[in-house]
Image (cartoon, rainbow, N blue to C red; front, side, top):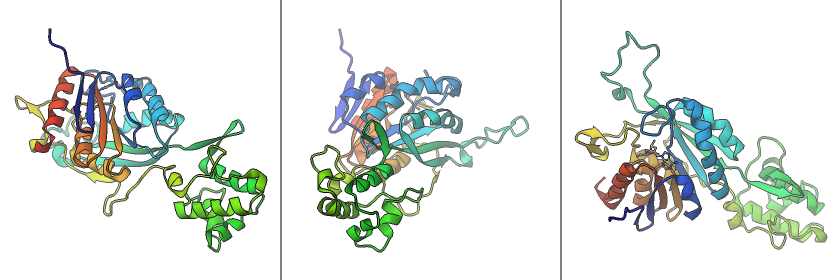
Length: 330
Ligand SMILES: C[S@@+](CC[C@H](N)C(=O)[O-])C[C@H]1O[C@@H](n2cnc3c(N)ncnc32)[C@H](O)[C@@H]1O
């Protein structure tokens, strides 16, 4: 009897056979989640034929991602426009804050020769979306849940000092009250240096009974470094916009068998590298719950991130494992 391989490991990259839901708890917590799962287009075995079923399919995954994500986690959610619109309210419900919608424009060559304009009742579709979400960070406080903005104000109020003193604490004219401690929508995340300055000031000058201020455990204040990790990483590459013009995968990168594409949904490594580079550092962990040919894991491996992927269909799993084993070729 031959025993089937169910996990393939290459250095810091791991591909698991089976439903991602059964694997999450064994994976290291992610800095990046790349979701390229069901589209509701019936485009591969197991993909529902309409988007109506998508909320039910995704719900347990959104819930799990919320539970395992760090405050610094970014989710890149790939789908069709309608698929994304259908599940966006659910992502929001599970604590994922919308950041940006990126349109992957595959270009006119994607439909060249395939469109009969006499019979079409809409313009040909050459796009998909990749939507960036970040984990909403909240602070439990006396039975209620505060947003980060509200928590900062709450902590300062506890000191008994007027908000104007936050400017003195940060050595600025009015930027601290205007940016970091405002109640309005023009709120900014305080950079670690500013955070350290007002924390130090609060602990020195605030009501002695309330110390430590800006603490999560009531024992010590957060450091600037810890504070920095309370939000998703983002490195903005000059010249990149939210429209990504990139052909569908072709040439040596496109995996084929007997001249036929193995997986219709294979994503370009270049775009996956873009997502991973923008939201993580070397050594960070990338999750790819819906692996297919595990393009995100290949991209992650290439740029020195750890990765954890799952693929439920054994044939795709086998090819993805071989691909990771030989990734240097692609
Ligand atoms: C859109 S494809 C991913 C293609 C992939 N991005 C690539 O470049 O090859 C989605 C894949 O997720 C797999 N899948 C669907 N539900 C899954 C689940 N619950 N756990 C693991 N894999 C799943 C499907 O079999 C399919 O191969």
